[in-house]
Image (cartoon, rainbow, N blue to C red; front, side):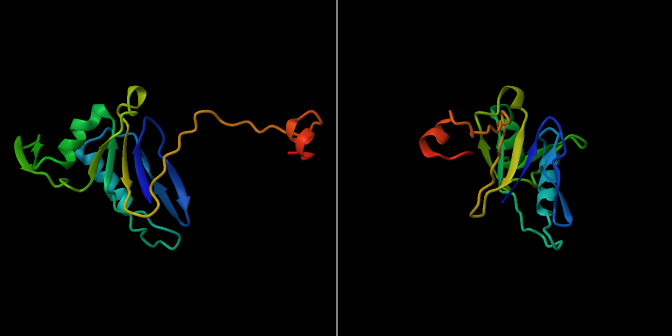
Amino acid sequence: KAFFLATASGNGARKYGKAVIVNKTTNPLSAASFAAGRTVMMSYCGHNDENLGVVPDTLMVGPALEDVARDILVNEYAYDPDDKVQIKNKNKGRAKVVVNKRFVGDYGNHWRLMDCSGEIKPVLLQQSKKAKLARMDNETDANVFFNKQAL
């Protein structure tokens, strides 16, 4: 359905009908950034300004952010640094934590908030090297020689 991701750069804004959907942030994972990302995702609208019904249910993090993610989503209480007291954790149970062992090194602080409830699951594509298109219309190209077909 949808995803929200935290990376080192960019805002990820794109048009969807009349609506602009932003699904990227540079904010580090915290209870506040999780809540903000969740609010943004739940506000996604489609072509006729109709809400898309996105409700994030999965937070994907690397090993370095596992404890932070569990503090945000699993613990019964959270620490309020202003009042220096324990308060009820309002984010408890709002999403499940998934640890991706590939989020290491330069990607160690990246996190993804996703809605995986639909039939079509979120897809994250990272293009490592842009493909080059090559003509294959010379008589010596295999497809021309064997199939008599120019590409």
